[in-house]
Image (cartoon, rainbow, N blue to C red):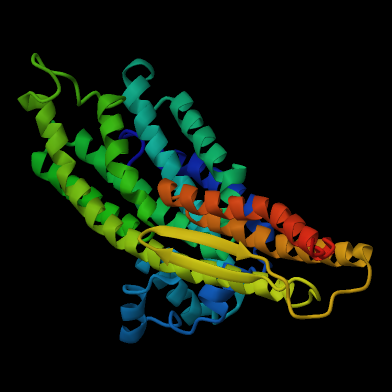
Length: 389
């Protein structure tokens, strides 16, 4: 058990605050438990996907090699496989697991916040001061019930945030404990350090966004730990340089897993955009006048949505007004389907800003240009034929 208060403190008082905070979080998110699978990613990842169902060798091999939906997250897949063993395809169990992970993360936020507060104010207030525990509890509560947590907890597909966050917070906690042990037990300090590296690897295998951890640790070394200070000749003198060297294993592991994750991201982009193309075609199958052709290209890290409108071979409706109504109806159908797809494209790839900007800009340009394209097509349809001079 992690000791968050000094020796001599009543044992029950150590966990009252984090326990109450976790209970509040569980109560706040309990309405999600009866929820089902969402109709977008949950269906693709879980309902229609037999590959993750179980923890046999073939399942584990698939989990560690797949790039389904553009994420490399084998450890998150393992939690889904365990859910299937326990619950089958009952979404209640999947929601329960996500809620339990979030409650655990909230408790970890309390423990980490308490240690950081003690590093800042412990000498003034005392390590066991009630104000430190109250501040840590408020920090954990704000984290636990903040609206930004809703998507990660309620949407089963987004569990990767919870699993990654769990090991991310554990890595920070192990790092802090290692720093605390530096002055008393060097061997114990090294064990905590390598435990932090191990937790970092597990966080990366849950979601690649954990790659930010080395920077967070450097910030903590500057403040509140005050381990990283410029020496007589600057930041690269022997004292500070030792702190920089500690981050090399984190940087190496992060670079390797990030390369794998980025490859998975690019591979998943083609699948996602192809799905969007099918949605646009489905929207326009009902239109009598416009027959759009959608071409999706995903290569060299560039994904473009190209929408071309051309006249179909069908006979036009009589009268310009009827033509305008038909074209407007088609445009609305295409926009309704494509707007949801383009939003999903932009949201899916925000973890890689350059690719997100590329996809988002091209998709939005395609949407914004549709009105001009339709107007151009309409002008061509209603323009009277030119007579020879």
